[in-house]
Length: 415
Image (cartoon, rainbow, N blue to C red):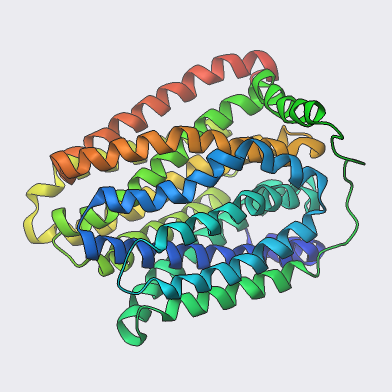
């Protein structure tokens, strides 16, 4: 990704810039709030299971609305959807101020915030394809990933410092203000957009529309296989996030509030490095080769976490920082090519339903894995749990090779 390419891309895609700004503000908010609330819960309970319940409430709305949210995203102008979801989330975040000395008010507020996300994320993914020409999608996705990882660094790295300096409520006020600005940014998007003329006028037609989106996924391998891979990879990311507090306190013997700068921030910098490497050296490689490289890197990192890291004594924390950096590179090489495949092979009129279905499918897989993983961590400890992600990465690598056999038949040997 050369500098001139990014500059010229942004100049000829002014509307993308507004969406890009909104995405950055939303992601910073999400990362700040997740870190602050996970830290509060773990400090008060010391339980990975209690932290996992935070993610259960985050994903529960996707379980309830996932099959239907994409349908409404396809029906309602994306500009309006993005404005209202950002604005309402800005109001909802202020409710965290009522969670003072108890963790229980946190869960319903997280549920409400996530409920709005079920409309925001499919709308954002659909808007990206609406506003950006097909040939620019890989660059647009890379820029989205860039801001996603930059906001990870900003949100998680800054929130711990803000809590220490100005109190635990400061990130809440900043997050709310960020979401109001995100709503203002998407206000400047075009008001005209191609939509379906009307929605279903009966219940049976409504469910028929929903079913059609899932049928499209099942019957198109170039969409189905990337969605399967995306589902399990994102489930893995959530499971990893839940183990971070326990990993920091049990294995590294550091404060949970320091997990952001020492573990999550290097992960974000790794993804930023992945953007540079992909654009500078690997932009001509096939998507499958990039993803295979990513899986190998992630597999190696978790093998080291499990087998070598516990033996390093006082060097555990700095080595973990380096390993998380490489984990960020590997994760980027997996996510971007896979996300681009889904976008490229999904028709405009179905994108909302496809990404809504993706969120629902991820939830179905994530919730049981989340609860199972939290129980395992509290039972056998973080060290031995690290063997499970290593096995998981190996299985996804095998799936990638098997999926290509089917895709070759459908797309003349190119992935």
